[in-house]
Length: 300
Image 1: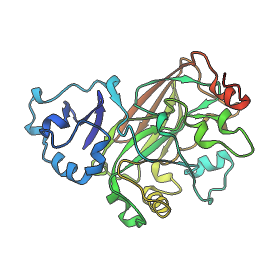
Image 2 (image 1 turned 45 degrees about the vertical axis):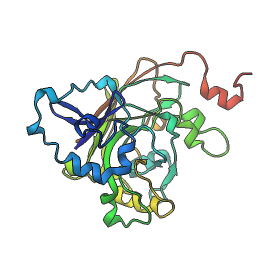
Image 3 (image 1 turned 90 degrees about the vertical axis):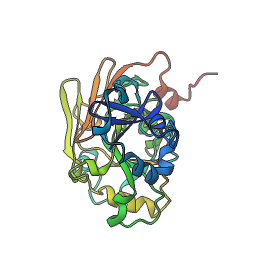
Image 4 (image 1 turned 180 degrees about the vertical axis):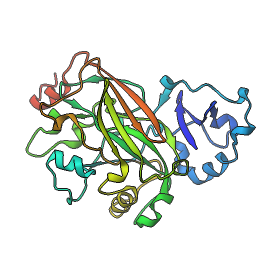
């Protein structure tokens, strides 16, 4: 099953188009793309009965990629995992055997899959990631049962302003990664049963015409079941929460010379079975957010 946020309405996606969930369910499920995760098991049972072969062309709405929003627009909790691929840990200077770095991207940074991001500085970096969407309240889950608690997967970009991230005596992970539209996700949620092996998916990102990251999610240090077990051992994961699972090697900050995104650049993010996102970049209209944070010059 593929599930999208189309024109801010919950939509089932098929090869020929989309089906508005509120209309097709006669109001049993609402249009809000976020609310569905609170009744995920019930919704999924209903959705399985919506068979593409039974749909006529008049039942389907064209899926305009430019009208897609974040599949999970307002999660209560956003978890993000750093240095979760061995090669990326090495390029970032972290020991591979260390405990995963966990932080958050604030919800206001989340957006849909095809956006233009205003660059707050000249130090914005790319990080393509597999994003997990939680489907059930999850507390103290064992790795063997973890996939049963996953609603689906989507693509994410953990865009990072390295200038803000590295300010101060300790890194400012959450602030450096939470400027507006620094969390593109999409194009839709895909349930694990649609994927041959959800623990081993090809993943890559391209800046303009250059492949900058390419790996497989099987190269994670902590795979999806392990991450759910470790996170839920500390706090309950709630339906509709999302988890950015880490990025492979190839980020701009680790290159010599460093390579950051600039106005006019195009970033393509792809994960096997999940589709692709295209993110464009433009100069910020006025304020330099990174510099304001560093100097405290935030205006009067």
